Amino acid sequence: MPDSERPILSLDDVHVMYEGIISALRGVSFSVGEGQIVALLGGNGAGKTTTLKAASSLLEAERGALVAGKIEFLGQDLAVLDAQKLARGGLVQVLEGRRCFAHLTVEENLIAGSIVRRAPQREVLADKARVFERFPRLALRARSRAGYLSGGEQQMLAIGRALMLRPRLMLLDEPSMGLAPQIVSEIFEVILELNRNDGVSFLLAEQNARVALRYAHRAHVLENGVVVTSGTADELSKREDIEKFYLGHAASEQGRLRTLKAERRLRASTSSCPTS
Image 1 (spheres, rainbow, N blue to C red):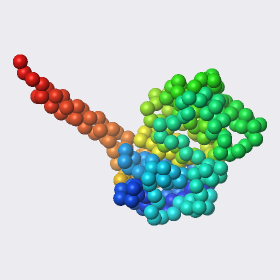
Image 2 (cartoon, rainbow, N blue to C red):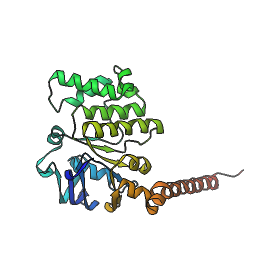
Image 3 (cartoon, helix red, strand yellow):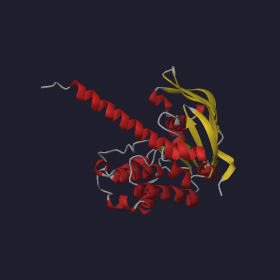
Image 4 (cartoon, helix red, strand yellow):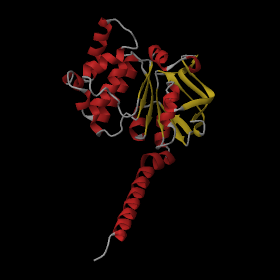
């Protein structure tokens, strides 16, 4: 069982702004226990990605800044740790959209992932072998350029590259986005295996709440940069309001709005056409 009494990551009253004027997070507080899988749920713009980037010291790249609050990794204040030091210490983020080096092969991508750790070659080769063992699809495409991989294979490669750093905590941003259900299941089974067998902790941002709650120990729901509810994955999956809005109602409502917008565009284009 995860040691929830011993946080590997903690956020305390975190406020984040972009370009000094856009408030993205407003008092976010939660922790990730060592050995836990914690999910961040919420729609687009809820603050999930910003939370991950704040926790991995990547805000500056997006003109963002932590303006209040405190974030600690293994008891150390992130204010004195840059992204590279965090990666060496075991906190690794897999960004949304995979972001592999398209012109490099699968093997070269994995080796690139180990550079920050400055490991000896024998360790790099051993780590690469372990990645191929967990993702057999990657082993078959080892000499293929990453740009020619499928979306699912690229996501596997992005996670595999992160594993080359031997992480203690992985931050995953929308790992299921745009992928077929079978591939999503494969990826989450690897996440579960890494958590159970290797003790890797996970903080993952997901819009696919059903999948996230199936694998997570705990979850936090974000809306407009605020944590609106928290609990165990089992508790949240049984709550009717979470079920209605995040697992069904929201998706159907978004679909209805897209249909209405399409109909409006069609009427507008038809009315603007010249008549004979």
